[in-house]
Length: 264
Image (cartoon, rainbow, N blue to C red; front, side):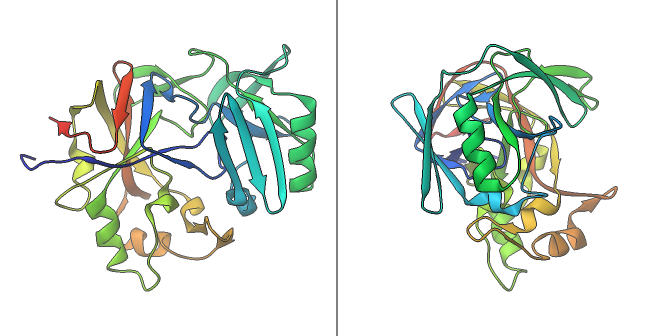
């Protein structure tokens, strides 16, 4: 990997499973980028809600400005402060991980319940350590956000290009909800990264990311089809897991920007 690899795109996803925000720069923390998947919707049984069951969630578009998050859905809009939350802790699970969260406020939960058509709450993870995730591969435990598993997902440009060569209907990288997209020379070379530095931040590769049915949801339409998982399963299926992109963790905090060169 002697050729120059640079950061091409940066994304944060403030609320788990809602649309993301394209950023010119982002501040990396142990749990992930600042404001990335610190919020999540849960149902009346305190189970987390995602596009897997509710593809329409991709149609909720967040923006962050002046310490507030505004959510736009169709012709409706709602806003709340990034700092606000109620004081009553709730115990929830994100897959096999126990997490402590708090509800943001009653009016925000009511707004989401109205838009989605069922009772739900918007909750927030407050601090590092409120959810821990164990890596069986590395035999390490990480403090993480409300993401499915690890704090960051990285994808190389050639991986998407290689896939699109096989697809009749081309897709964008947003199908895979990456935090960082880097320029690469060969498809899936990101799988083999070890440790590397971007801007001020040292990262470590944990493992390639196993993908689920959610990548078949067209994020711009909220419609689920058979691709790209059908095509990916033909050449990226390893031990019954379809891999695309790789999970990474940060070893320190700091700023990364579009255009930063990756140092190996």
